Amino acid sequence: MKLILHVDMDSFFSAVEVRENPELKGLPIIVGGKISIEKEEEKETEKPEKKIRGVVSTCSYEAREYGIHSAMPLSRAYKLCPDAKFLPVNMPLYKRVSREIMGILKEYADKIEQVSIDEAFLDVSTKVRDWNDAREYARQIKRVIMAKEGLTCSIGIAPNKTIAKIASDFVKPDGLTVVEEEKAREFLAPLPVKKIPGVGPKTEQMLKTMGIEQIGQLASYDVQKLVAKFGKYGTRLHLIANGIDESEVEEKWERKSLSRERTFAEDTRDVSVLNNCVDELAEEVYNAITREGFVFKTVAIKVRFDDFTLHTRAKTLKSFHSDLSMLRKTARELMMELSEGTGKDKKIRLVGVRVSNLGVVNEKQRKII
Ligand code: TTP
Ligand code: MG
Image (cartoon, rainbow, N blue to C red; front, side, top):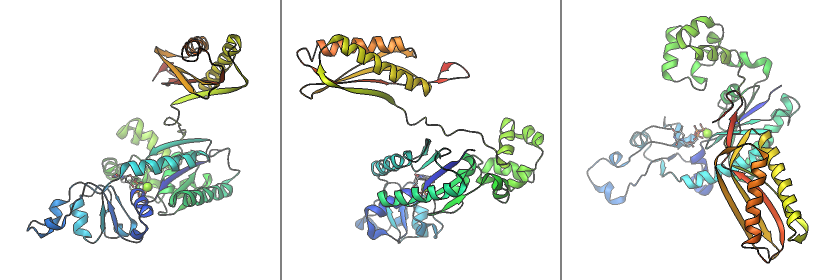
């Protein structure tokens, strides 16, 4: 059985701002654009809302009570709640926090797929025993994110990605919604079709003209008629409405390089020892990337000499390769360059082999994408 978690941080940008500035807690906060309502400008006859440019990136739940939401012009948000705290977007800060959160989540997943700055899918199928266990597991994730980052998130747990995403949005903020496999259709049925990720106003309207407003109606609708109207997407919509989604959690964002290294028991300059070590590491790297379905373009060698200085040499090949012999040959050449060049008179304590510039082999097409 598959068990998927979808984690989505609550009012992310705004929550990070509150964490950095605890006196903002409980206030309506609006993050967005570049705002400068300066004192002198306020004295001018021009209406203040004219000086606020851009759109709302996000706002605190307190601000949402005024009807403010993401993508709304800031000038409108200002009209709705002039007393709100308006803050500019501090992207480097949110990116750093996002990286930290993804790092925490990674520890809890068999596979993780980050889908935006504040959300990720986690495949936890081998990590939990059953649905109750999954609930406890999710509580633990929430506790750790709170303890380490001081932030709340909402989590959905379900047998597939689509339902997990819908579930994480079901109770927010600080929510936890578990949709067991047998209850999936029952959970989806009363929800409006726009809750299905990807169903925007256009599809929603088209479905409405067919008399379909809730997911349950979509589930029991004649699939042939849906195909006639939406093509392949009609089949997908019908499956999703019936609680079926076979898409995998894909770790596409994660792997940028792969390396293995080894420290010798005794520092050495022995060419055959070094070459053997490079060959073994190359083979380990090769096995790991092949398992993950990658091909490589760049090969690098890392060497730490006996005086602890660290040196690297890299070579980017003309095209992607997937063969061990090419990896070995390139790694050996680079090793030779380093040991004969920079480290001519030094012994070596550590050797590492790395591949980067990775491509993915698409199994079906047998070509590199
Ligand atoms: P969301 O997860 O959609 O929103 P949120 O985390 O602010 O609030 P919620 O509790 O409902 O999940 O988006 C994550 C961040 O992405 C959000 O904090 C700001 C940014 N964002 C924009 O910059 N513009 C947008 O239109 C949206 C929707 C989000
Ligand atoms: Mg969010």
